[in-house]
Length: 308
Image (cartoon, rainbow, N blue to C red):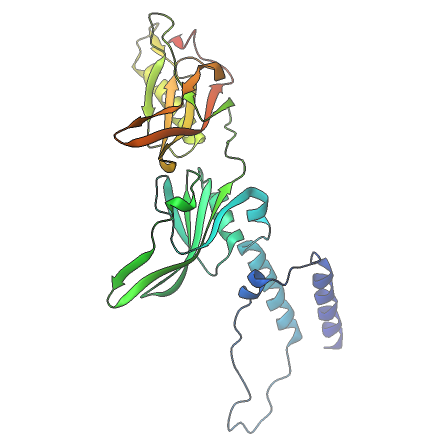
């Protein structure tokens, strides 16, 4: 048993010295400490309890470190996201919603990890909600950057006498909104989308989609449109190939409204990004985060290919 205890102590020392320093003993860290189970010597016991099983404690400690490391890696949020707002009483209610995750605790880094793991997520809203189920820690994911102005769900719903309440709401925007897509290269146009002219008898415009969530989804749709056109074309006949798409976000009065992707036969550069939005029906519509993606290997001549 003595050898086992020495080995256990050595293992614990190795774990302790391997931990990065310094560790911030801040509010976030304190909140992550689990509440202990209040225990004591059993009443009425007439025999001593067993000796402390150090091996079991070491195994439990290693397991806890691994589990917490997998759950929340410190620095994920600060490395990849910019805080937009915090300590608010409303949750985000706007366009671009993807999904939400329940968290075991109010953990910004874990919420950031959830966002990074979901294709198209560029913004997350973490908040506490009190409802009939008790206190829930929620992490809502979005495909569009948002603002405090869109965090307008203040709760207040009556659930059988229990009024839902939101608190500690915070929003984080991804630092790098652009996404690398295999088989494509991109150029970003900022707050303008492509306004493509028709240079000849063939219209290069192939349509628009508002059901997309990310450039990778647009790329898959571009590939699918091309594959469908190829399949429908007769042997030695021509078909329209998607070689370029413009991915951008639409804002209405500066509030996230919709994500769009327009598809074209040919590629366009920033000189054609001249759509800056407009005012319509009393609302100001604007463009944001616009990026054009071009195939690395273009199909056909000016987007017109021959089936062979």
